[in-house]
Structures are given as C-alpha cells and as structure tokens.
Image 1 (cartoon, helix red, strand yellow):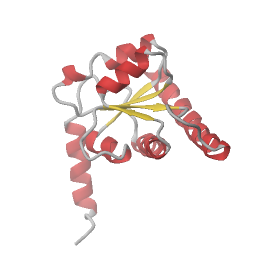
Image 2 (cartoon, one colour):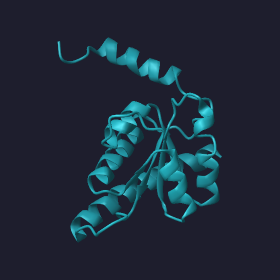
Image 3 (cartoon, rainbow, N blue to C red):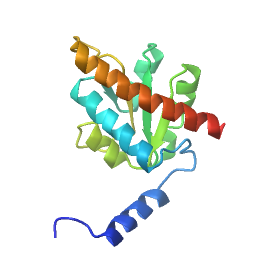
Length: 154
C-alpha cells in the first residue's frame, strides 16, 4: 500500500520524460541524476546552495562558481531559457534533471524549484575540514561526469 509497484513507477517515469522541455540538454541519466540530487541534498544541509532563478542569476553575475542544476519540466520555458547562456558565459557547468519536484525535495524546500546553484563553499561561515573535503569530492565527481556528458553533446 505504501510503495508503488514497478508498473506505477514506470508510468511516473514516463510522465516525467513527456513533460521535458525541448531545450533540456544535457539531460542527466538515471545514475547521474541520482548523484546530482544527492549532491544538492548535501549542499542544502551545509548551506552551500542557491535556490530559484533570481538567486542563481544574481550569484552567477557576482562571479560565484559552482554547478547549476536546472529542472527540465518547467512551464513556461521562458523562465529559465537565459540561465544556460549565463552559465556558459561565466564558465559554470550546468545539467538538467527531469523533475522540478525532485529538485525541490533534494534542495530541502516544499515548493517546486526551477534551478539551484551548488556552491563549493558556504556563503556565510565555514565548514569543518572533513565535511568540506567530502562535499568537494562529491562535487568533483559530479562535475567530471557533467563535463563529460556536455563534451559528448557539443
């Protein structure tokens, strides 16, 4: 009763893929999506996350570096069409994930989120050295996969 059957999970996954915007490239596969959302979850716990289009754009314009994670099922698409261009100009890697709801859950918010920026350092205060190293290692792992995916696309 609590868990979905395999058939229901497949239907939900299919619905997510149908709702994707045509510009959602490079799109993370299942494994990379899971890793990316895990990184977002860790970053949210350590206060290394910017949520929403306005905060992300402001942060990128100020020169903050990180990984931009954009939801692929945004409607209307005009809300986020400028974000990938900003990321490319500022040399910030970006990746699309299929669902804005999943992105919001990973980012510790109740509202669906268009995009988040995972920073390498918290905006205020400092992290412990071991926590910083763990976050940095996860970040580097995801970044390498994202850049590999992006280079195969362009």
